[in-house]
Image (cartoon, rainbow, N blue to C red):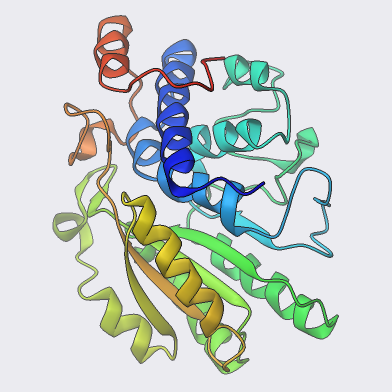
Length: 283
């Protein structure tokens, strides 16, 4: 049974609790972006993707594929994969521990279900998604490929090479999402290297675009319905997703300072107090 928007919202709250506890236990990790993308990843794996723990294959054949180009927000992905049944929830407590498959950046060498490629070297994920989507078209696989990139990551030239390639090859079974939160590790994106108007840029590169509020579950579900309907029309699609880094925890919101920082014990307790306990329970 596909969860409704209310259940998905409760799940995303639980994912945020998982993120706080995982990074605290590891005393490292990228907390802010993971919190900001909890709603999106929850919606993808519990509602949108035509993929399940039973159908997932490392080669991606026969199901939708997702690539987390911004691999540093792995706590959110690991939590969602566990909550969706890809592996045991108790594994979340091993995040970033030596010998654990839940490394700081996802890697397939550990044979962790849900992970197709190593990600986190910024700029690469969209290129891989283009190749996977083109392969699906060549193999008459009707499924869709999704990729999540960052706005700071969009300063990388490889992103725009992939953008040109996808448009030139009419890869119209590709839905990419940019996390447009305006923050990167060194400060606000506009101060580090302003990327300007992403809507105008992606359209100029031959893509369709859709705006989305990435911390609003109802809007996420609405926009992905539109995105799916827009596939197969000769152009790749970019969803311009506005989020707030650190969303859900007031002292982490809207600042780059929590991009790559884990909370201490006092901060963890304060954060969890703002994220209500859910029926799904902590790991």
